Image 1 (cartoon, rainbow, N blue to C red):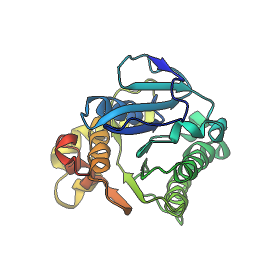
Image 2 (tube, rainbow, N blue to C red):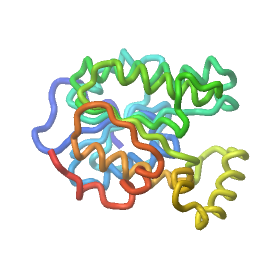
Image 3 (cartoon, rainbow, N blue to C red):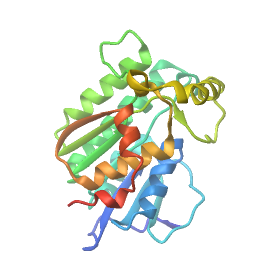
Length: 242
């Protein structure tokens, strides 16, 4: 593992550079693995609160406090694609205020830094039902986050709205675990209009995000759950269009 090697003085001429926020989480960890497997990316930078515990020649890992994002802006320089996989639950955060900090404030600050440092694409994990006018607090915050990130002025913004995520989390979430078991059982029946509610493996979402990043499309785009399922079934490098 390489730590704090990059100093913002320049970038390589071959291959793409990506940066991942939230790499210790379920989706973020899968995104890192997908990027490391991709031949399109030369360097994968991770800003994380704790070590990932993996080693790879392309991995550049820096341990930071998210409250100090601006002080670490140099790590965004030279990056084309930023993958924002930050997210928590109200129970884990401890309050609605702390939840908003993780799911809205930090992603917004990261988006602003990305624009300042010349990042071309900002790809963020949102949620099905994201709506700033929703009466459901979780959906409302996710919708607000989409709104403010889209207004920053980045060349490309890609927002992914998955349904219930499947995968092995490092922390146990009883509600999600029970929901996952139910959704897995119902999956064969969820066709037609119901297909948009199907639970989705975190690895599928990660593959979809990298696939979209490699298409290098400008503008703001939102990907619903059923589209994510389709995007995540192929291989990322097959969409390597620059």
